[in-house]
View 1 (cartoon, rainbow, N blue to C red):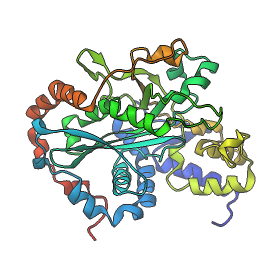
View 2: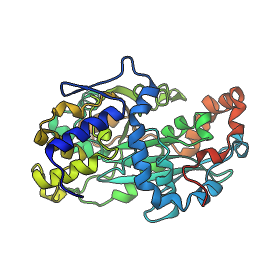
View 3: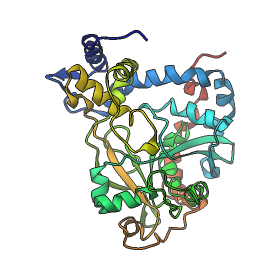
View 4: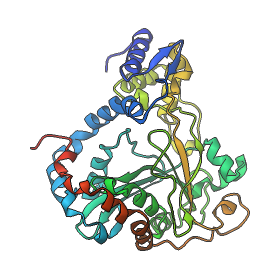
Length: 379
């Protein structure tokens, strides 16, 4: 990429933000008044298209196989016979390609996750079709609402954040999404199968920074809603238990709104003109993350650091996986006393609480044609 001047990059950033629908005045992004979910989707649209364009070539040639083999037509789904199966995704597998392909359909750009990572696909054993996906990665370190809800101070968080994973992608694909399949997948993220996969993967592992071998306990899963306040994770109560708890909202900052083509220019400029912030040597060299790259660029070229605030405040949810989960994370007890939640029991609770009544009220899910899921033309 040819070198770009600060003046040229500044103009490219402002044009990019305005192209996405943002109003930029005096260095601050202004959101549409009383934004709707459609407004939020619009603000993410260009970043999603960029993600599809960048990732598409790696999965495009497989699309026919994916549609024919994994995506259900509505008439292929029998609600009363749905049997979910949680399958861990292995690297360099067909399932990994399917996971990446499904992520390209999300209404916001899905990152690849970072640090520790576990990915799962949820299949319907009745017809071998894809229900949804779960992607877990390291949680962000600074999240005030989460930390306050748990009751963390700086030291206890540093010691116990290891036992938390964040669902960076979590949801259902059509036609299961029309049957509230997102709630099913959110419940399955709390399952024994997911928790045991964490235990098997990290048993005996030494932590990167503290050089400690910790109990391989996945004690809590967190996630944030895609488009402001969530209707998927709210009120996931069955058998007298609330699986996900709303704990607050993010501050509305990030870097996705720089990811629609201008980020490559930002990164090239920062590589030439800026130094990475000091960080632990175990993490390697280079910049900490995309947010650091964007912040350094904005400062270097004379734009306000407040442009990092895109204004989409996402709702934060937490799912403790044991009766003593919060006390364990605060260092008050030695064991979290895990709930015994096999996927089969969670699926049964979902079916009785939501699935059958939803299918009866909205039978039009049967009209879904998997051709609608296609991103690319037929080869």
